[in-house]
Amino acid sequence: QLAAEVRRRWAAPVVAVTGSAGKTTTKQTIAALLRTRYRVLESEGNLNNHFGLPLSLLRLGPEVDVGVFELGMSAPGEIRLLAKLAAPNVGVGTNVGPGHLEFFADVAAIARAKFELIETLPPGAWAVLNADDSRVRAFADRVPDRCITFGIAERANFQARDLETDPMGGTYFTLPAQAYQCVPSGVVGPADGGSIGAASDAGRDVRFHLPLLGRHNVLNVLSALAVCHAFGIPAATLRDAVAELRPAPMRGEVVRLTCGAMVVNDCYNSNPDALEQMLIAVHAIPARRRFAVLGGMRELGLASKDLHRRCGRRL
Image 1 (tube, rainbow, N blue to C red):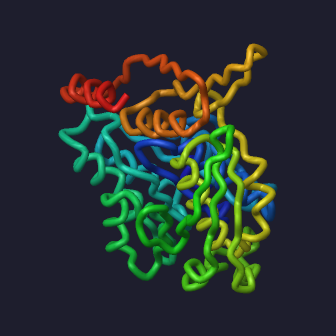
Image 2 (cartoon, rainbow, N blue to C red; image 1 turned 90 degrees about the vertical axis):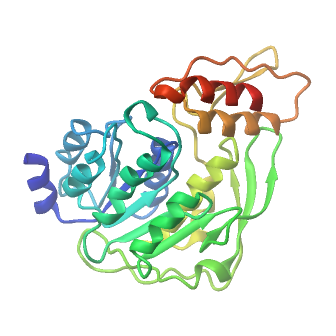
């Protein structure tokens, strides 16, 4: 109740992020790019549940222009509760996968729980959705006139083209101007309630270099670019900010050893989809030999053995 009242009185824009994997990285990426224009408060670590989100909201104050928070869950109804507390102006859906299956009947039930963010969006709020995930793409039916999509494989407003992997596992990609110029920009105003105007990149394609490991992080950055577009920040002004992004600890963290080996630490609360994405990313890095050191994945319920076997076959 305290957090909801603080949020109501603060009355500036909030971005809320949910998904089965990559929430924290996506939240941090969105916050980093928005900081090129605004004073941003983001939830610390993974404070994303019915304790963590209120603690984060209680930190809102006049020195903050935009809040960026992640919403997690382990049961149906939790996202709805958190979304009502945060009252987001932008809701971001990253993906739906088999994480936390211990608490749900199947992946479809997880999708329904994640959808609670979109169905709870207040009037005038916008959804930023992953077009490459069929379940998340279906969320757009709820807000067809207030939706910005992003993706790589599927057609989207913010669609990455011409992907190239660098020797360290980062990615070069192009954002074609004609795609995102057909969606409105500047639809979410700054803290003073005004608008900074529409983003304009003068019809230019923008080439980015993302130092984060893997194709999945390109999707995370595309979602952040879409959010910034909603805030009226041109994509062309964000190239340096994207090039300076760094991974969160234990989330695709890259360490170079003095012997010449590269260690990729991606062991934070992994799930089958996250593991598969990181295996693909490591496979793309030029190397004489590759070693995968894998631990068990928790909270997968009755599907745990089958999912671990699936990952073994993929490996």
